[in-house]
Length: 240
Image (tube, rainbow, N blue to C red):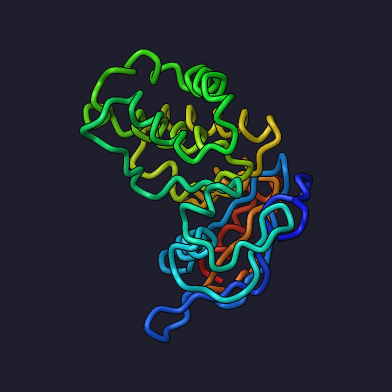
C-alpha cells in the first residue's frame, strides 16, 4: 500500500456490481473527501445499497475503491473497517440482547487507536445523550430512533474517517430524523467524510454538499443543496 493521504477520503472509480450476472451497479465514479457529506438517492432497486456493500467488501465488485489513496480491493469487511471506513446498515442491526454500553464497546474492537477509547466514548455519549441515559438498558428495548443513534454511535466508536449510512431515517419520527441529521452535521464539521443513502430526496439534497441520483445502477444527475426545493429537478431525479 502507498502512504496514506488523510486529505483524501473515499474515491470510487468505475464501480460495478452484478448478482447472478444481472448488473446492479454499472461503472459509477464519485468521491467523498474530509468534511463533506455526499448523498445517494434514487428509486428502489437503483443500486444504492449495493454500492455501499461493494465499497465495504461485503459483495463482489469490480472497479477501484481507495481510502486515503490506498486501494482496498480484496479486503474483507473487518479489514476495511480498520482502514478508516464504517457502515451503518439499513435496519440498524444493533445487538438487541446486549446493553447499550456493550454495543458501543463492540464498536470499538476495530479501533486503530485504542488509547483514545474513553475520549471517543465520551464524544459519542455527548453526541447522543440518550445513550448515556440508557447505557445499561438492553438495546432491544430502545425505540427505533434510539436504536439508530446507537447504530451510528457504535460505528463512530470504530474511529472512522469515512462514515457511510444506509437509510438512516427509515421508520423514524420527524423528531428522531432531526436528531440523527443534526449529529451527522457535527460529524461532518469535525472533518469526517459522510456518505448517505436515503429515500428522503429533498431532505438529503438540502443536507449534503453534493447528491448523486442513481437510476438502474448509473449516476444520472449531480445535485447541489439549492436544488432541494426545485420540484422539476426532483421529478427528473426520480422519474427521468
